[in-house]
Image 1 (tube, chains in turn yellow, orange):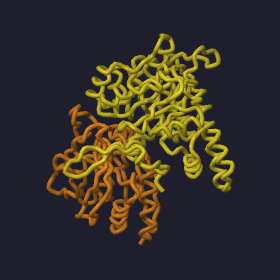
Image 2 (cartoon, rainbow over the protein chains, first blue to last red):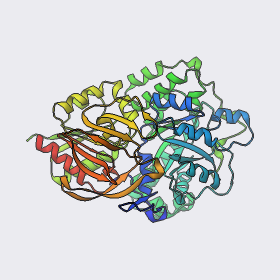
Image 3 (cartoon, one colour):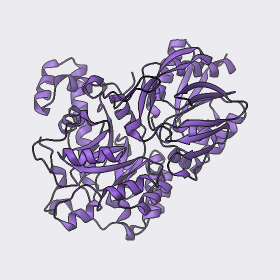
Image 4 (tube, each protein chain N blue to C red):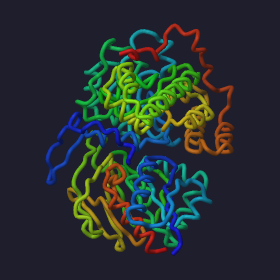
Length: 322
Length: 205
């Protein structure tokens, strides 16, 4: 009934907390996935310092994601991109009331441990940073802190959910200011969901088993997903979003919310743009409001952007086959 | 008796979950009514009851201010419309709120529930917890409380009835037509709280 369903049994991820005067439990699937549910219809903004985090909060961001460099700068800088400075993360946590997320490298269990100890509200195991393990993602069930992972297809999303991700963001191509890849991937995931839903509705178990083999995940997870016809966790769009119209379009494709990376703080009108993207995400169903939001920004101040076809580095490909 | 209409404020947060829990409550109670997701002044003005869902109170407040929704909701509550605020919704209803760590933050509030709120009262996400809550004043002796970066009530006005406490902190209150909880009944399969809200709306109609 509640779309938190798809609940993989709590025992897989539950960690018993300390016993107070009453008995309590922490780190359950309900709490981890539930946290992501509270972000729905919101915008998560990439930030690199307190000032940007406060601009984001004032603009109506639902959460901030702390990075050392914004994705477009990661792209330019080359080298190895790692988790952000703990001191900066803590400083941001002390200065905004909204949840604070931070990224760790794919498969880097101890960057994740460090972020968990820092008490960030969610950890993003992200392809924007340089992968630390080409063959494994982090086993996320063992953490009390919830994780979000990127995915380019339904199979990739379900593999991450099976590892304990409490939230998915469909990948775009980070740091490009080009929304094309984000649109392509959300449409792809939607189409795959429709396909398995129709298999479920026509009670074709054999085809569902084939899909589970193709996705390289358990049959139960595929069946559960097929039954509800959507991902069993909250799904945001990410990668290349630069304008209010970009955000509104992705919301109309059925995303639960938006991550904006370089699109805001690499633009010259960050403050106005942050506000405008939130407005367009909230009121995406009302064309006049989206127009108002789009009018708040100046296209001449947008992140110039990159054509995805000419890129040497495709971040989206990182970790997607395992 | 006319058909009741309950709205879920669909600005930001877990709207769908409350929508489903309210639908299920109506059908279990056999009450004839509709549940709608609302955002605009026009939609809000038609309601007999409103649920303000969990989410981020700063966002729900700011975005409700944009289209005049905030003013309309306040007007409706003051003229007697029952309202149920959950977590961020409870903060949004309050007269006064401050964050446990950051302190006072400027955020738009409805200013109708006579309480002071401490935001993020139990800590950050890692400290989020589930625990058994009893709300005897509304006849619910045991309820699975899902607390996610939850607020608590630090002071109450004289008209405010305390429905539940956890570890000495006030986590559910009622003031006339206003019901508010720091925890998320919509994330459980127990719809008893949503049912009691639907009954409250139905009785007034």
